[in-house]
Structure formats: structure tokens, C-alpha cells
Length: 207
Image (cartoon, rainbow, N blue to C red; front, side, top):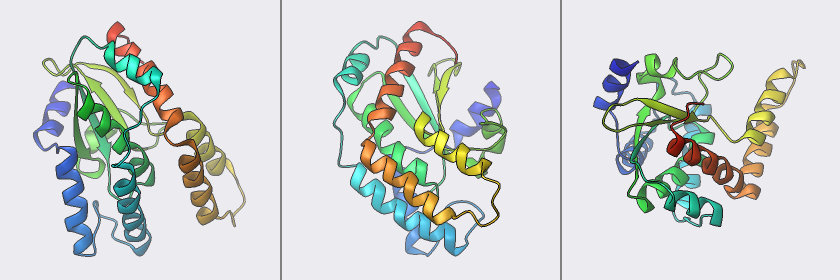
């Protein structure tokens, strides 16, 4: 596993570099990855707006602030993402805020479709769901734990949608419902889950 992580990190980006990449690609009418269909491009445009909005927010819950203050070790967060992924757009700004405000956390990002070996180590129910945030010891690159691809209620929505056998199920309606949930939740659920992740980091517990 270590050599796969090392290879991914060799091409990893900062959050600022990731945002610039997405902006530059959109200026050319493109997004990340091999799929350049209108559906993916439209999603990438929406995601740019989402990230622009969320980048301006850094209000943490008291529990998350306490968990951050309780960190004693240093940790690298390696995010697997793509520009067309709506969940990534909703979630990565929060992890960037964590890295900006804690001297114990650093954030690097890699693209899923350029790092499939890494992605396949962190499948969700056999699928390449993103974003995945891998928490590593920065010196040894040991994996301590990981989080993703989305907070539990959102993940349940996705699972329920995928289990729906009806051939005419409406993806657009589902997508609106999912992002409405994110908007109403205002990262509260994600922050609560991150609190538990940070506690595991200090205990060195893999999960």
C-alpha cells in the first residue's frame, strides 16, 4: 500500500492548486477525468458555485473546535476527488478549513481516475465513491483511518436510490434532494463525524 500512496502523493495538489485546475478546465469547457459529457460539465459548473460559496464559510461547532484543539500529533489528509463530483464540492471546503486552522492537519488532493490503484484500496460497497479522505502519518505514510464518501444520512440517500428497481427513477430529482439535504445540514453532520475521526487519530485506531 505504501508505494501506491507514495505514487499518488508525487502528483498531489494543494486545495488552491485543485481549485485553479477546476477553474482553468472550466474556462476550456472541460472538467477532470475522461468523461466530458454535458452532464458532467454541467455538474462541474454547479460545483464551482458550491465551492465558491462554501470556501467563505469556516464556522465550526464547539465539539469540532475542541477536537481540533485536542490534537497532539500531525496528520496528512489525502483526499481522492474529481471536479464533477457534487459530494466532493460539498465536503472538501470543510476539510480545507480544517487544514487552514489547525497546524496539526495538512490537506493534499488527488484525482480518482488518475489514481485508480489508490482508489481501489478504499472502495465503498465495491464502488469507487468519492470523496475519500485518507488520514496518514506524514512521516511513515501509515494509514490511520479514512472517511467518506459522504456523511451517513447522505450515504443512506444514495444507497436507497441505487436500490430502487424502477426503470424510470428520476436522477435529477434525487440529485436535487441530495443537495437540498447538504444545504439544510450546513455541514453539521459532517462536522460531527469528523469529530469522531479526530478522536480516532489520537488513539491511532484504524476504522
